Length: 123
Image (cartoon, rainbow, N blue to C red; front, side):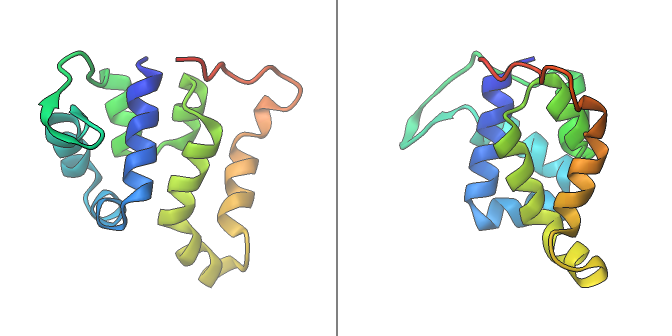
């Protein structure tokens, strides 16, 4: 797994409201667009681009399906993984189930990791 590239996706997408909305509405197309044209750009540099990184099929699937558990298990940074999906799901979950509903679901789905070492976030 390219933890760096997955974490870069999570960080950049969450930090840009337009990108976050596009990712929430059409994850498959946004992930493909990001991987091909947004991700390779060096931050603050529209001229140079990296050709080194790309998602594995497993990473791409997890990103497209918003599978935060799989991303966690692959070693995506916990905070980046949580905050992007709070940005997508917090409001709908809150309307249905009250404050912190998504965070509680996130914790519940990762409950199997209690007492175990978390996957490394080293890149």
